[in-house]
Structure formats: structure tokens, C-alpha cells
Image (cartoon, rainbow, N blue to C red; front, side, top):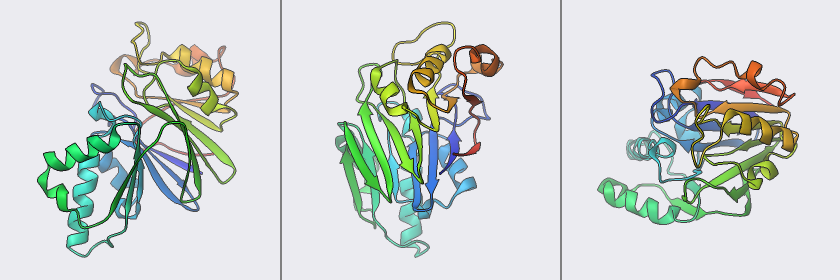
Length: 251
């Protein structure tokens, strides 16, 4: 299974970092996990957006995880109308309330009310999904009172866990259990922020879960000069990766 980082940053990260987004790929297909602002252009650098028919959203209350869904939909609509793309079904997955959010999106952009391809919106919580032979497991997580989920993606005998935005909770450890790669948001360093993880909590989760590798992402400017490998080497013995946009990892 392959992973491409579409966005590794935060709402206030620098010009080299789009906000949150990832592309998972196996022999069976491709799935996007979150699509924050800046991610769509990075997606075009690593894959053809018209070949993607599944997008999973961790939470929709903050645009740094969902804003470029607008760009994705409009690109697909115009491509279908101009007969560049086939009108295949787009499958969208998100936490409780995502259906109402998507309905509001179509009202905010009237041209989305008559999209020339079918869309299926599915709300998930404690679920096990089969998406193009990926097994995707979801659990609700704790993020500032929002409806939010984390994911475990399994394919080709490998497993990748992605936290979305969340503070420390058992669900993160459970989804990361024995994962080949745990992608954890690392929003705080010195000052702890509710609803988010510190780099030390990321290492704790990866260690408790016996994950093979830890990727730290959702990075704010105060993390740019941090050497996470040196800081966390004694806390987690697996591989430690500092995410960057367009980074590609194979597990």
C-alpha cells in the first residue's frame, strides 16, 4: 500500500504546506482521506482526480480538512460536462452530520445542485467498510466537541492509521494497533491545546499500539525547526517521519 501526503500543514502553516489531506493507494484503487485547502493542486501532482471515486472526511467543521472538496467537485463536474470524464459515482464518507453538511454545500453553490454524476454520502461512526477492497475501520474521536472520526486503512496485508484531529483517546490506540504506519496530528508542542495531540502524546499512542512507524503531521509553524526523531527517540523505538507535502511512503 502506498501513501502520498497531499497536505501536512495547519490553518496557519507556511507556503510549503497545504492543509490536511492524504491519498492511499493499493492495487485495487485510490482513496482520499481529508481534502483541506491547498490539497487539490497537490493531488493533481500525484494522481488524476478523475480516477478517484472515494473520499473520506474526518470532520467537516473546520475547512482545513474539507475546503478543497469544493474544488474537487467543480473540477469533476466540468470534466464530465466536457466529456473528459465518465460520470462515475462519487462515494463520500464522513462522521455524523456529514450528510446535512453536504446538503448545505450544494445550497451554498447552486451549480452543485445538478451535478452530472451520482453521489452517495454515507455517515459512519463505529464502522467497518469495504471500499474498493480496502478495509476501512472508523471510530469517533475527541475533537473540541465536534463530530469527528479516525481511520484504519487495510489493504495488501498492510495497515495505515490516520487520526484526523483528536486529543488523546483509546480509539486512537485501538485503530493504530500493530499498524505499519500511524499518521497522527501533532498540533501542539509546548502549550497543550484541547482537541489536539502533542508530539509526546503521538509517541505515546504509537508505543502503546506497537505501531511500526509514526508520521507526525498537521504541523504548525513552531514545529518547523523541531527534530522529532531526537525528541522522541527514547519514547518510541519505531521509525519517526516528519510529514511534508508530496511525501510518498510505501508500507
